[in-house]
Length: 206
Image 1 (spheres, rainbow, N blue to C red):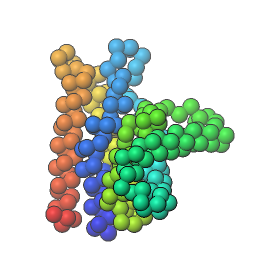
Image 2 (cartoon, one colour):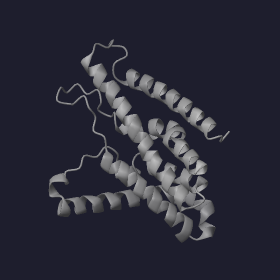
Image 3 (cartoon, one colour):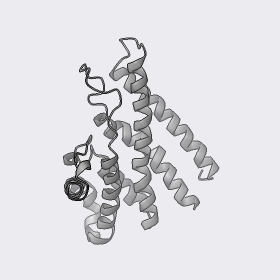
Image 4 (cartoon, rainbow, N blue to C red):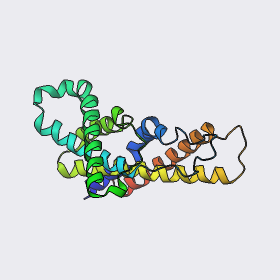
């Protein structure tokens, strides 16, 4: 149980320090400070794509751990992870949209933030590498794959709140826009690191 909790903390907090800001979060705020007044202060949170990240990482972990021949392991990280991750993301996204269109047509117009062509801005292949490296069994893989998008979701909610607050209150012009996003990400990363260290200490990981 402690081992699974440690993986959850690592995936949800520590791993996001490396990934959610450097690779994935740019898509969320690509147009966050658009001059177009019609752009809402609340950014779209891609629940649909975050769910697909979990499914994709878990599916790819099974594929590379049990289906790909062992002699490919040395090279697959560099030559297969990204293209296959992109293909899986594209396929799952199209399949899910087709199912929504058939079963729940009123929810078929799904808003997307990340690009499936880039395997969701590189989130899936990098999370896959970490999962393959750390997961010793299927339970470990589920925890790592699940808490990675949950950590991203929490960060998106926090940054959305900061964005909404800055749009309602006066903010100096020199910090509005990209500088405010970078400062917010930096503070959020410090908070995530601190919480992760505290939880690791409680779990007696270190």
